[in-house]
Length: 287
Image 1 (cartoon, rainbow, N blue to C red):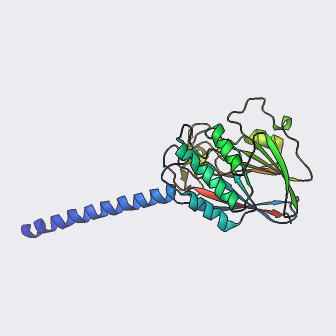
Image 2: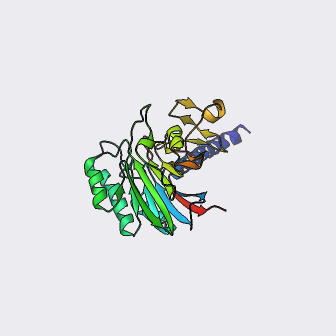
Image 3: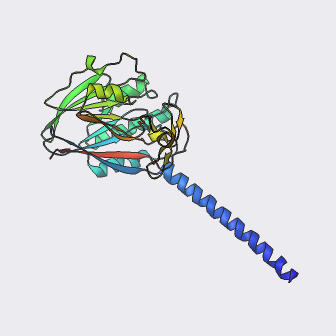
């Protein structure tokens, strides 16, 4: 009997090693899926100002790296959706990057323009290099730095405004910079969310990035693992009195703010339940 037990021991050890390697492979697969594969997030807004449906593609926070999701993958996802307009919301590279990396979002924007899409951009706190902005403009994008344009898309007037704030003072007030056009569907592009101030301004749709969806999201609607703005762990579970602006829609009177969780994995590839995304947003007539 003792001899039989000795023979079984090596097999048991081998089984444990096999299971360990299996769990390691599962962990690596889940990690890769959550950080380096691109999803398409579909969203919809209805408005009485819309005459015929309009489709937007929204991307942000690429934080370009040598590895990770390729420009071609991002561009093809957008092309397959056939949007009427593409919005790029800033931090497409990381501050102090070499030009090789800064060139990547320029090439992405140029590819989208060449494919026939109107591309509107705002910058964030990272992608402020003057040469980068100049190259975006040369590529044919509309870079909005407290600028605005009114265009007609599918029979609907769109009033597009963009800001490049990396800081909001206590006296920040968009009403001193822009006037909403009541005959148009008003869109505000801003890298960093500022819900209270944007709600006071009241654009029909405000599009933001910056948060990265707080990187790791707890499954089943548990919210972000950590809320960086207020430095809170498990905010939706332990601090229910707090208003958390992490990702998705946040309505205000006569409009809504949408935050995309972006594409990149800055400052580290720790995304969970919050994959990099291209947002395809359909704006439809109300009723």
